[in-house]
Length: 530
Image (cartoon, rainbow, N blue to C red; front, side, top):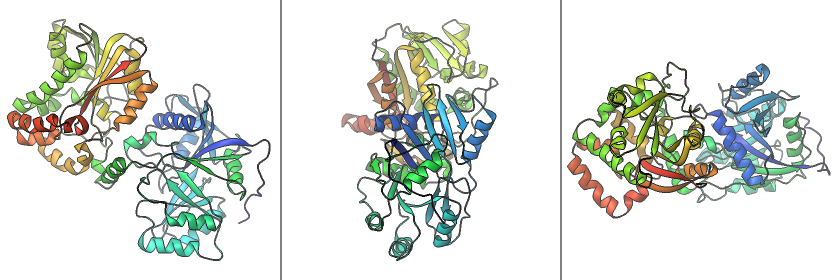
């Protein structure tokens, strides 16, 4: 194929930031992905509105780009919270804009699996190439449709026979023009693959990209690992202008971003290799309230069926640990007004009332008040139905906002936490399962957990540093944290003895293991402006 004619950078050149390997998985709320990508591009570029691009690499049967294109064609303003989509003068790109008129360009592309089980990316093209073709045929087909071919690194994907195939390809005298790809999932202890150096000796370049895994915690990764280039950028033809820059042999790429830390690498590999039903994101369909709200996890947690998981002496002990931790965190706010978001489960409502707090419970549906109806009837607390992503209260309406048993099942977690923070005058208290715990083996405990409890649900496990950083961006600082248990709650339920469970937990807490490895965590985030 005759590629676009290349030319050296001119005085009209601009700095451009690119993540060259992006998937939009089903568990990724698109507003969260775009907000995170913009934030990541801003951090690395030190600019409020950098020229930034996400190169999609979609697998067979998936076409999120086409879905976004339909949003642009129909001018759907509310398709993705806070973002609108706009067509360009080419079919292979779209411009996503937020309410501050900041943009991210989204470029179409595919990911193909060859007959030899090697992955190949076809960047900057909206056309498909069939899976299962020989490698050289696949590379030729990508060139024929005007795409840029990339062989991306992946865990174990360049070993054995596939490694030999790649080595043979790199040592051919005449080979098609292509790139290799690096990604942020490569752990820091994994040496730079020798194929990168061999490719660079051949005049090929290595394109870094995030390649986020299909885990809910990966939705904030896009934009955090990629490269910077300089060249003439046409916002009406972003795909073709970037293609021209990339195919210029005089252009130098400047990689940016950090490789994966060892703990998260191991946790992600455990999760992604487990049965799909046990991955770290909700797999059930979200229960929709009669009001049509998008986040309704509390309908389940407010049910009698869910309450049965905390029945009996063992359940009382589990809830007592949660109650005592909550009251300690609230001790600095006597007689505070408290909004309990999703608190229809009633686990802390009565203890809060008994300790002098003025409690309002917000639920996604009228049905969420059933378990606390007696307290409502006695005028001891109030209840309101509302959308947790758009809380029906003004800023700083309550001294403290609490939410338990919700964050682990929410999909738009950033919007959810933003709303909790908005209506809190002094502090936000939440609970969440953390990756830095025995919960990292959750995928392997799930079948046992399901068999024991019957009514358990999959849930999202969070990287605490990600939550801390997000709250910090909202003007809140983590001031206290209380990891509740070192031993997973499912194992405590299996023991069925609060005395034994309490005895087992004590040495772990005494030696500081619970403080570091315990979960779920109850954490307090305090507003820094008060």
